[in-house]
Image 1 (cartoon, rainbow, N blue to C red):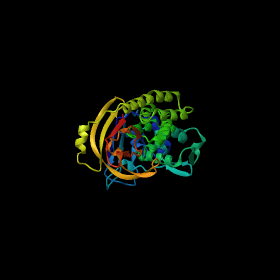
Image 2 (spheres, rainbow, N blue to C red):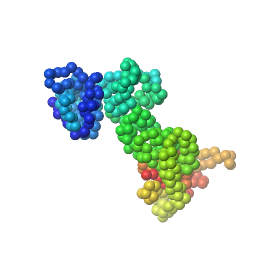
Image 3 (cartoon, rainbow, N blue to C red):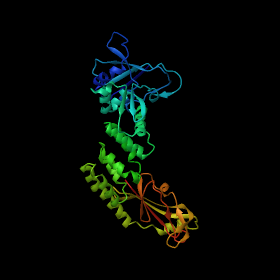
Image 4 (cartoon, rainbow, N blue to C red):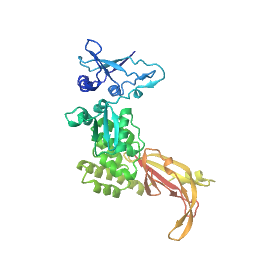
Length: 378
């Protein structure tokens, strides 16, 4: 027998009345207590207050007794799980589906109780005064099929895992469309610790224009633009569709960021050539790297380092002289830059993280100069 409590304040009476139609089992006693299945929504009630871990597993569904006639500002559950065996946790005990959605050509079983707790959209779909609530299969139209199916499955797992920045942006877009503001805010910490590929800049701005935490995500997106030209080009494309407030922030914050970036490029800190000479003494097949890491918000150098990076000798065809020229390139420059720096300036050329960077280090096939590597981020 487990007694689990939470201090989280909820309007539990209204909440319970809303979901009783699908959750209630027959009354077990003449008292005011009723038995209901709690597994679709238990982890939402507890959220971060309690992590329930059992010491067994069973196909028997957990039951809880809830007194409907009290003002439940504090909610307590008495759970008799009838469990024995191996260790498991509550996320593995919630395979309860009570409705079916159709997305494109895919049908997926869902918990209407769980989705309704997350979203006013789903609450209206399943419990509102609409014809759809009586349909056995409810269709959601005009939404990307595989991405949205993954999104629904993540909600049922109570856990979002992102394969890429694109998948996180998709999830944030779905959460906004379905009125799930809490989920949007949970995605933000993941995004702001990632770099944004250049081909996603436009898409990211359209998502940021809609979500409730738009200022934070916009600041992150704008820090990823490599040039004023790129920012103005994308703004020109999006102006008919994004809000005036978003456009104004792009111009004010984005252009300030890029101006700071250009200032760093124009006035780079020169390396200490004495340190570089000692570093490169009697070294072959390596390039000397002078790394500067800038925080553009505070306008300071956070880190300076000198190190060696291996290079590879390669013959490339030169169109001007119509012949092959032996050159050496330092590869995988991003592996030397801390992950929260999103832009690199290599010998005056700007790159976004995840873009390929091949740094030429010589004129005649052998290293003759220092690679000036500057990282730029928040």
